[in-house]
Structure formats: structure tokens, C-alpha cells
Length: 228
Image (cartoon, rainbow, N blue to C red; front, side, top):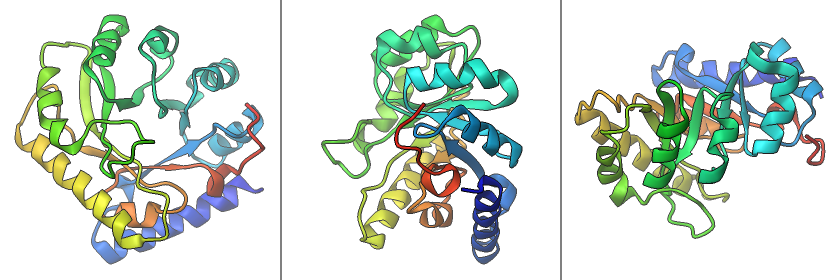
């Protein structure tokens, strides 16, 4: 597993997609998802030039943060229980899984400065996935206006794990349309200029449909059988 080579391959793919679609490749940030790899592999990602690291679990975040600290820009990308906010709030710069008002209030209460949040949207409607329904996004965002420590920088979704590329593309298109709806409200606390979507198996489609953050695990840092 050569993380440097993997990252260069991913960046070449990004460059190619952006050239084809008229996008600026500098708009696309790669988050190395380090849930299933060691601290050493996470450090290899940083050495390769990947400065955004994403963790799904509080325990994994703490373990790696102890070794890496602010050498990385930390993203919490997993489902977040309200009672665990206090344990991660001072370590991360982005939370990708804001999906309910109780969680937003806890983040607002615990944060020392405005926290960059993505509203997680369950575009596919799968029961196994967390997130707001698409129909509830605008209402949910507007409910956050009084929370001074919440900044809605964008929307996040997970596409279905399927070989149906058109279904995946449709999900990404729908999230992009929702993002534009939120942007059109011109809310100071919700600029909503980012889209977090796309993983190892579908990031090309995500970029084509407007992703600005892609979350890459296996094809970038691999999988060391669940070790933290």
C-alpha cells in the first residue's frame, strides 16, 4: 500500500474530470477516511499531501488525534450522538453529520467558536442511512438561525451502494439542487457553498455533479482490518 501513489492517481482522476467538466481541480478537497487504518497509515496520508482526515467514531478520532493533533484538518464524518459532542468538539473543524435540532443545540452549547457543519441528507431514502429527508432540509436549516456557533457550510450525503450509476448520479444531482436552494436563501449563518459527497467507488460521479469534498478510504489509505 503506497499512499503517495494512490493519492497521485486520485488527483490525476480529479484533474481529468475537472478538465472535462470545466471545473477547477483546486475546488476538490480529498478527505482521507482513516477509520480502518493505523496512526502510521494516517500519517502517511499527511506525508503524501492529504491534510484533511476523517473519522467516523469518537474512539478512532481520539486515538489518532493524540499522535497527530493539528498537523491535520479533522472531520467527523460518522453519525454523532448528542452525548458525545463534548468529547470531539475541540478536535474537529468540520462535522458532516448534522441531522437534527437536538444535535445542533448541543454543538452550539459546547463549541468555543462557530463550528463548520454539513447537514446530512438521506437523499436515497434508505432506512439504514441517517440524515434529514430532502423535504425537511430548508425547514431544518432555517431553524438554526438563533444558534450562534453553527455555520452551515454545505450538505452531505451517502449514495446507495449499488452498480446502478444512474441512481447514484440522481442522488448527487438532488443534493446539488438542495444546496442551491439553501444558497438562494442568502442566510449569513448558512452560506452552504460546499458539497460532501462521493467515496472510493463513486467519487468521479460526485465530482461531475458538484462535490467539493470527497471522502476516500480504501482506494487511498487501504483497510487494515478495522484497527485504529
